[in-house]
Image 1: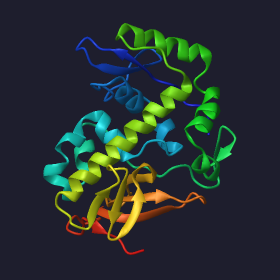
Image 2: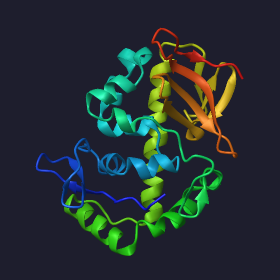
Image 3: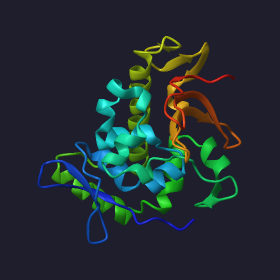
Image 4: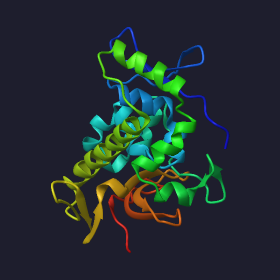
Length: 236
């Protein structure tokens, strides 16, 4: 997998942040937050290593705010409306593929520190200098690659928590636990920071986790391929 062209968040005339790469702004990357613009501008990179899923993309684009009123409709339609339907499907790296020398299994086993170390080949000193110069223009402190990865990871986890909270409002099979760090889905307890939201090619949407063998295991169906089916927990 070739190294991607990185997009750096810059301040937009509107006061929001937008991703910039090459010689111009990237369409569909305007966000109220710096990390949101970073995610929208680098979705290929962050989703391919499993750092971000559909939940993070939806939060960054602002469509997650309206998720509660139409949870059964999923996030796909809302993302398509803002031009992000094509980047919403999160599959992770295919098991046979490698990125920066690591297979999908390798990325799955990594923590924030190890991911940051590996991504140093992409976010070079020169890139981080430019990135921090733009952060300074927005009144933000300089950050390291590790801090950036931690912020992206934290943003994804918070977005996933918000998705689950919205779903739990209408589904008694979902129960948040431990200061909202864990969730019971149909009686099975999962750590929220391990869960990811995926939109499949058939239009169905599901929540699940990635195993150490890089296999996505679905635990909750948000929306079936034909619409009516879901939301609800899936059998073990």
